[in-house]
Length: 376
Ligand SMILES: Cc1ncc(COP(=O)(O)O)c(C=O)c1O
Image (tube, rainbow, N blue to C red; front, side, top):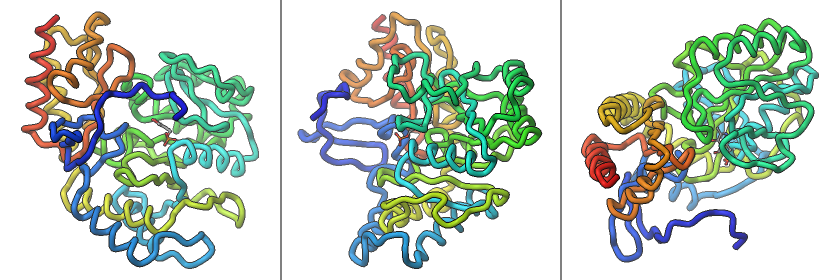
């Protein structure tokens, strides 16, 4: 293996809901879900059934035949996201979704310049842009002349940029809640300003919902909290609950033509079955409301810990900023309390659990955190 991932010395052998077991049968609480991927819980019975039944019929055929499953998915996504008139293009990952969004914007308005924001992460392909200022990213992907990185949540900087070169801007891409960049919520004012300026200058508003979307924030897209409509929403992670699938949802104002975008694997039968199962469970079990409720509970309780510097996020996308010297708490939660969490920076714990997380599981985490913080 090309050694690029720091590995926890745990082999997961079985999983159910927010619980996973290692090969020795030791139980862990999973509050990370493989980077926000596990949205409806591990091995949800409806999900397993739908994929298994689909696999027994047909797993793959290319995008050259009628695909009723894709239409069904487009319909249900449109309904649940409240954007029934938007068009769907399916691909395989978050970076690919953003790459297609940026490309589509450029086809649409014939321009090249992209505005992104400091701390953003949009993927690792040549078009997708990354500006996480907490990581040393030196690959050339973020060095192109066409990408400008402005300060996040800075309305004045945005206005100034549009004053200077607004007519050259093809798209503005923004996460509703920056994930890799440290769980930073975009302000309503900021998102509204992006909407206003992109509309005024004929630029495309791309809402990167790869990590913060799919109901995790309590609304389908986290940008919805600001009451704005983007032109393109990109999504992936929670969309397939572990089956690789990504997509962009595209405003009816952007018109397609044959050959404009394309993919080999995107929208295959198995991926569609997985994505449909996820949406059906989100709807049936009211998971968006639940994410908001359990998320609010967690954040309220976390804010009561005097030692925690900041608690940020929405719904079940939560960042817990600790003083720098408490960085090892995250590791201790895993080794001593058997709880998986993620990190945004060494002192920021990132919680991205399944939207099915129960109150008891939230309490288990709060008790464990209390115990660990007393060690320091
Ligand atoms: C906001 C955001 N956009 C895009 C991506 C890239 O997604 P993928 O790893 O599926 O290519 C990520 C991944 O972490 C992300 O958090």
